Image (cartoon, rainbow, N blue to C red; front, side, top):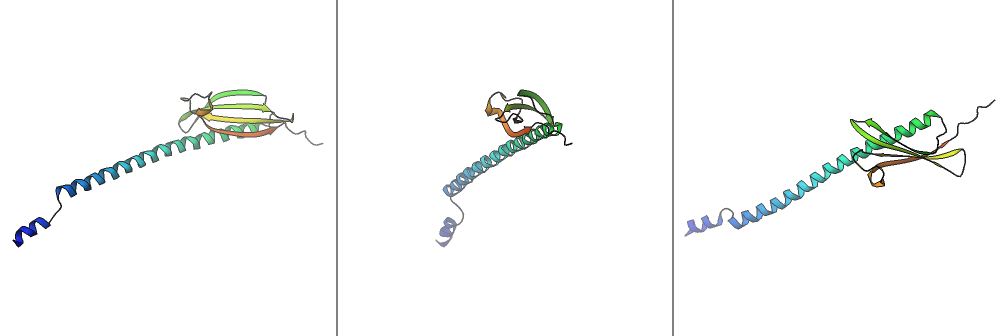
Length: 135
């Protein structure tokens, strides 16, 4: 009698094993979803970071030229970090005639750049007319 009772009490039943496997499967699925979302967000963060660098470079170029920017819109492509980037520079007038608002937007070429949704980064600054040399 004791032998039979000892055999029944040792080990897991099939139902317990199946419940444990179900819990493990649900946990693994959640973990895989979290990891894949993290990878996607990391790629998007990298794109935005490089786009920010492209926009900052363009604004720095405009500031170094020390030319008064003309009004209007200018679009071109730039290569950085092994990718092509769409860059649009829009210059607007302000209430002060010697001051212009310059907005630089950057997007990947595969996106529709004419819509604001495709723009990864937009930076704005004010550029003034070059100062007269002192005499």
